[in-house]
Amino acid sequence: MPLILAVDDEANILELLKFNLSKEGFQVISATNGPDAVKIAREKKPDLIILDVMLPEMDGYDVLQKLKADRETAVTPVIILSAKTEEVDKVLGLELGADDYITKPFSPREVVARVKARLRRKSAPPAKQEARKEIRIGSLVIRPEKYEAVLDGKKLELTPKEFELLHLLADNPGRVFTRDILLEKIWGYDHARETRTVDVHIRYLRQKIEKDPAKPKYIETVRSVGYRFRDTS
Image 1: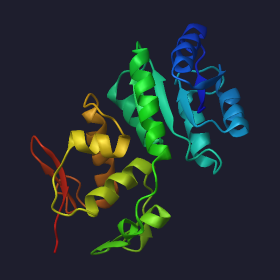
Image 2 (image 1 turned 90 degrees about the horizontal axis):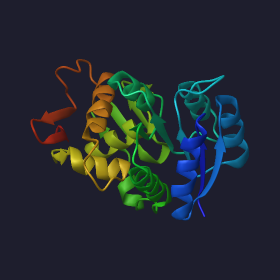
Image 3 (image 1 turned 135 degrees about the horizontal axis):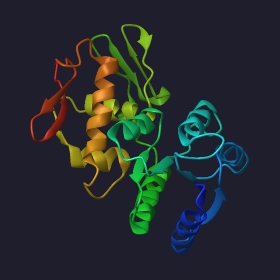
């Protein structure tokens, strides 16, 4: 029975989450402020965290940063659930390491679906050894077994999703991936409602690996379709 930590300062939201997740076989624990969320996450080690942004004492972004900075909780999937709907808020959450961002008011069925999608990816069997080879493209080196990428001899500070995107694209040079396919392969979604998430991650990834993000050397945009890694062979 997967353990879900739901963090929100509104009792009705917590009850709604607990009711719908429990119906699907999840065990749900809760916290109503930032410090308690961090403490419970470290002690209970939940399989996934649903995190509100506007929390008392410590906001959700600070909670997220603390969780990602701790080796014990850094790999725990986090879904932000927030009334903040501006793109800048979504981008900040994703950049800090959140796996997903859902705005309020929300559909309980959608939350459950996204929780299941994240847990499916977490429990998926590891890739075959041959798919985890080191990839070298010029001065860019990707090491899947270490979850790291190096450019011009310097390690890149990539979020998990940025690394997974880079690895998938670089491991298939020349192949065009639609936003829907990237959303399914990297985020585990079986629907295409949040393709903007892909664009946000690609934009930030380009800022880290491209000398001129406006004229990308590595990741090309295929207009009205998606993205591909430039085939340099």
